[in-house]
Length: 100
Ligand SMILES: [Ca+2]
Ligand SMILES: [Ca+2]
Image (cartoon, rainbow, N blue to C red; front, side):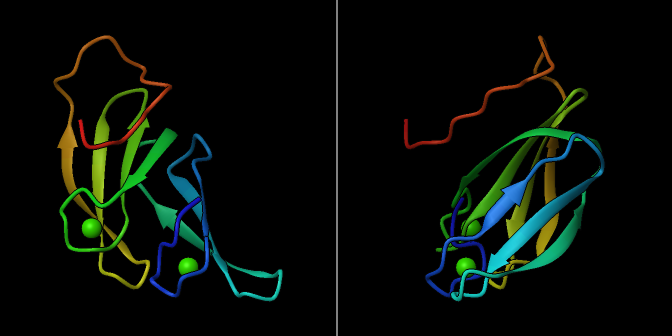
């Protein structure tokens, strides 16, 4: 959960294990607007944080084959920024983001 579109309401990101993840934008009235997010590989887990420091929440997705960063355009639209495939020992099922 995080505010993915900058309206100060918590939204949901659901990694489904397929190449289609689900974003549920909070409408603020106990309803959500559902949007599909297509990814390059089936995502098993997601970490949400502002990875590029521009003030919006980005995605760090883990699949069985790679790790990917998707940058937010500040409106909840995510574009692939970087694929990290050289980390051995996958699949990576637990992600944690922080300022280490
Ligand atoms: Ca929001
Ligand atoms: Ca960001």
